[in-house]
Length: 207
Image 1 (tube, rainbow, N blue to C red):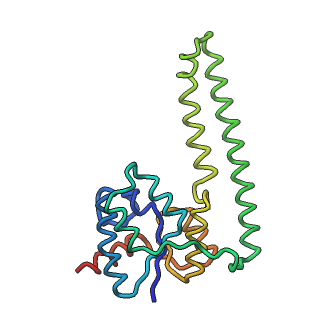
Image 2: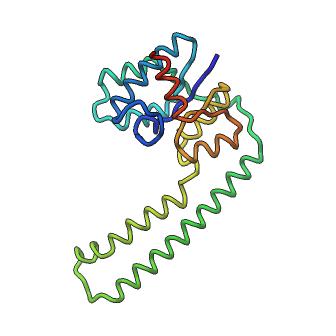
Image 3: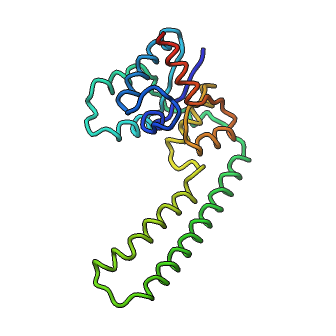
C-alpha cells in the first residue's frame, strides 16, 4: 500500500510545483477530489496534527465546507516518537548545523548594526519618528538576512520534524517543497516524491 505524507506548503505556495490550481481554495478542492479517488484505490495520504494546525492557521474562516471535506479524506496522525530509533550521527549533524547557523546569525547582526551606525553618524539629531523611518530599512534587511541564515534549508518547527518522522514510521513518500524538510528527510533516509509528480498522480486519478 502506497502512503504519502504531505506538507502545508503545497497548498499555499503556488510555486511548489503541485500544478493543480492558481489559488489555495482551488488547490485544496482539486487535491481533495484526487485524494478521494486515491483513497478508494487503497492509497493513503497522511498529515500530522501539527501540520493540520499550520494548514488551518492560514484561514480566517475555518468552518468552510472545502476545508472539512479535505480533512475528511486525509489521515491525521501523529508520529510515534517513543518507538522511533535514530542514528546518533543525525544528532551530531543537527548540533553542528545549529552552531553554524547561530554564528552566521550573530555575524549578520554585527554587520547590520555597523551599517546602521555608520548611516546614523552622517545624520543630525532626529526626532523619534524620523529615526524609526531611517533605521527601519536596516531592521527589515537584518530580519531577512537573519531568517535566511538560520532557517533556510533547516528544520525550523516541530511540524517539519513530524513530517519526516511520520514518513519514516509509515515508510511513506514525503511530499514537500520546503528545502529544509527535504534536506533533513534525506538525512533520515525517507522516501520522497516531488510535488509535481504527486500533482500528476492526483490529476491521473481524476481521469
